[in-house]
Length: 355
Image 1 (cartoon, rainbow, N blue to C red):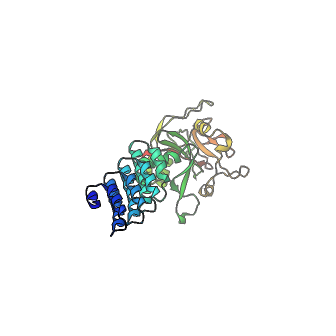
Image 2 (tube, rainbow, N blue to C red):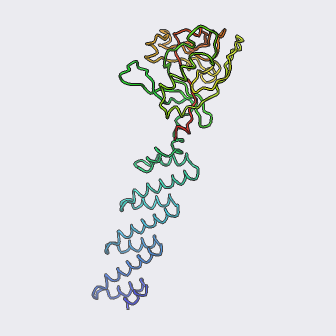
């Protein structure tokens, strides 16, 4: 009778019948087997929690304990297929000691982050992937996906931050190679960032002769967009530097025109831009590199070794240029003075950097 009930799928009735004759033959084991088959049927119907409970009720019989965990594993996989990433994660974590459930919990969150990325939530996806320590999938995505790389760059290149970009000889020890250039982020315009070198990276005259000149015609402009541009940046880095309209910087105090607008990759800040981005004297003070000192740039003994640096705004005439002194105040010097340091400025395109 019990066997017939079992064959008809009447598992609980078969169990009761077997238990009533538990002292006969293998009836006691067949009672448990009836519940085992019930649990398998529940699992086949997608009733994962019911199957788990049934298996757990006969723990100790056959592999029921493992099948209880496998029921939850299958539940988690079903949740994952339905895009219930958090539900799948919680289910996998509850059986973290079973099979690869712990790894699958992490993978569930990775898939959640991937879905967020495809839905346009790059910031949320970045934060979630960053939290998945030990996930090779997340690490690879963070390193290679342009959308995630852009998020990282966007956060790194915030106004006021110090970043590295390019290389240039600075420690005056050519044998050990060029050093990374450090820059202060002055401003943001969408996915572009305005950078200014943190130090005076070289000693170069504004113009190689004491002639009337402007930013458009001076030799420093040619040096920055020629020698420095090619010496400091790789081909890929050069692609990340945006060509910019550099506005002619007029000196209204002395009624001296600053020439015409130019299109440049690298440039000097104007007098007004220095006041805008570096409003305090202490912010304008700048230390020279060893190379700059070696080239006899002026170094102030009373201002902790600071140097003065060029702007692109003319001074009292077009033979002079406004400069930032070692103490952060302003002065104008003749364009051919060879004691000044240079602080190149440029705009970088973060989208291009992310590629």
